[in-house]
Every structure is written in structure tokens, then in C-alpha cells.
Length: 103
Image 1 (cartoon, rainbow, N blue to C red):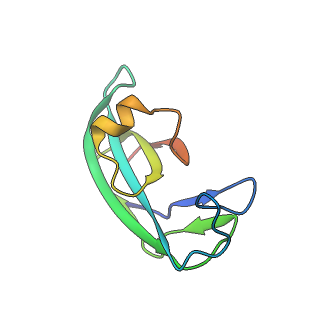
Image 2: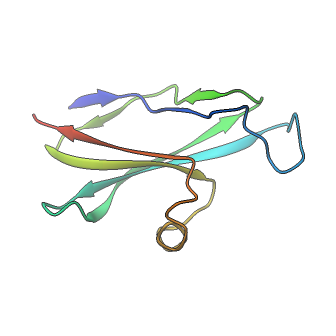
């Protein structure tokens, strides 16, 4: 498969409400395989990342391999969001991108 490392960059240091140095927070990464029309067909994989400080950029320490060719949409989300939460708040995720796996 094709190994991919996920990374997100915020415009400013990430803050949780009024906190300036939370002990830790979490980012969920969800990967959906897309159908031929670009709709999310099914959840391909997900990871949760623990962060212990405030920075502008975060990346998972591990890679996920894609074994099935196709297009994928990747979200960085507040921890604990379900598929239903994402549908109802599609503009409130931390970040989103799409990739295409050719082989």
C-alpha cells in the first residue's frame, strides 16, 4: 500500500476556549473512501492523536497504508465526533483534504 502521514496546520496556535496551555487534547483523524461521484462511501480508517501542548502544526507519528486504489477524504476533527456529528457540522472540522491512490 501507499503510506501516508497526516498533518494539520492551524493559522494560529490552537486554543481550547480560554485555556492557553491545556494538559492535553485530542484530534480524531477519519478517512472515507469516495465513490465515483465524490460522495463518502464508507469509513476506511480512523486514528486519535493525543497532543500535550499548543502548537500551530500537528502530525500523526504513524502512517496509514492505502491498499485499495481510489479517492479518499481525510478529516481532522474534534475528538469523539461521530459520522452524524460530521454531517451536521461539515464546516466545523479542523481540516479536510482529499487524496487519490493510483496503485
